Image 1 (cartoon, rainbow, N blue to C red):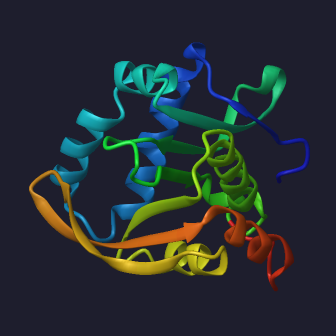
Image 2: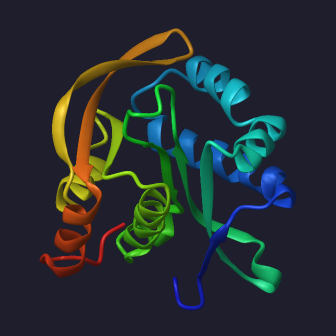
Length: 187
């Protein structure tokens, strides 16, 4: 399924396709644990085409796509890195979404490596993220990729206040674990 998949930086022209992809994958991932009205509210605010466009062109972040198909237009996954103020805080892996049929193929690991490379280009030694405490597959992937739990926070999806796990890794240490550890075909 992931043969011939190209990883590239998102471009302005990708905003509409990314909006559709992100909304669908978010819905599929969280529909069992979150009310439809809350999902609809969150998706309407966070995955609009204009919002995706703004995230793609934001110099304080980076959006990477895993694409396939004619002209590389079919999105199979994406990752979004955000550098938040204050600038001394580690960059945030804000999103890492993979097409359901591509999970377990190593695609998530490839996108995560692109994010790590961007952290290195920006001189960041650490990378952090938050993940919904019920998303056990993602938590296992992040732990296997070198992330450690650093705390907990809340995350609002519509009116639903959920508990997220905060995780962090050293960029270079995580790379060594990810590339040499058992089961590096994640995602």
